[in-house]
Amino acid sequence: MSSSLTKGLRRSTSRSKAKTSAKTAKRVVKARASAKPKARRATSAKPPARKAAVKARPAKKAAAKARPAVKARKAAPKPVVRKAAPKKVDTRVKKTQKLAAVRAVRPTPAPPPPRPPTQDESAALIAFERAHKEFARGRFAEARNQFRILVDKYSQVSEVAARARTYLAIAESRLRTESILPRDADSLYDRGVIELNRGEYVAAQEMFERALKREPEAAHIHYGLAATRARLGSIDLALESLQKALNLQPNLRVRAQHDHDLNPLRNDPDFDRLIFSQPS
Image 1 (tube, one colour):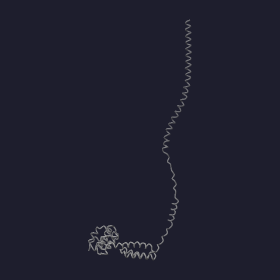
Image 2 (cartoon, rainbow, N blue to C red; image 1 turned 45 degrees about the vertical axis):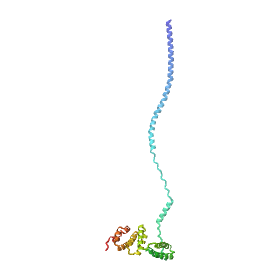
Image 3 (cartoon, helix red, strand yellow; image 1 turned 180 degrees about the horizontal axis):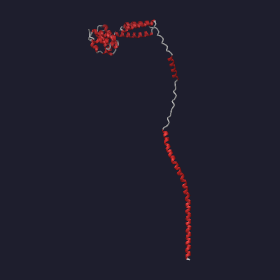
Image 4 (spheres, rainbow, N blue to C red; image 1 turned 45 degrees about the horizontal axis):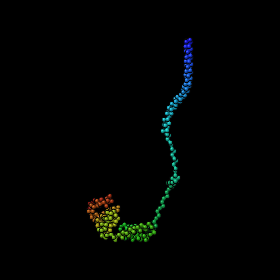
């Protein structure tokens, strides 16, 4: 009996073991079955991502290769050619050019010949020249009288009469100053030297001429008059006065060799003949 019991127990335990193993096997199968789809799902989701990644890589490479070209194109833009604005031509310029061309073609008319002077105008001019000669010689009283006659007789000749009035006023002022001037030759000479040093050459010439009227044989007065006329540019008259001075006083040649007032005469050959030639 014991053997039968042991056999039964063994059978029951083996059956229970088989049942438990069958249950565990079913659980394992279920777990595997439940796990397999998950793996399949994961595997099914992964390959598209890989393919997309694989596809994206060459696209990125192509984009990376294409970007420098785009940058190069942007860096070197095409030169913009601007059209020059049309020049506006002023109609006034065209008109002036046309007029200039027409005038250049047309011959310019010759100026009309000058109108010949009337009888009164010719007589007034002759009278003015006579009075002016007296004025230039320093004869202011005679010049004043002639200018007065001219103004009274030829007042209708407006231009000549106006010039005569100007010289008449100067002659009268010179005559008024004559009463103030010194009378003796030496004082007039000293006054002439002062005016010469001041640069008042016209006044100096007048003083020397007045002094020569009082003392015509004074060599130093002739020399001062020569220097004054040289400063005024009257070369011939200056050489004439210088020759008179040297004839009266030959030792003035030494003074004339270094006198700056006689510089305008140094280029004249007559000056060299007067100064550097030995007196006979």
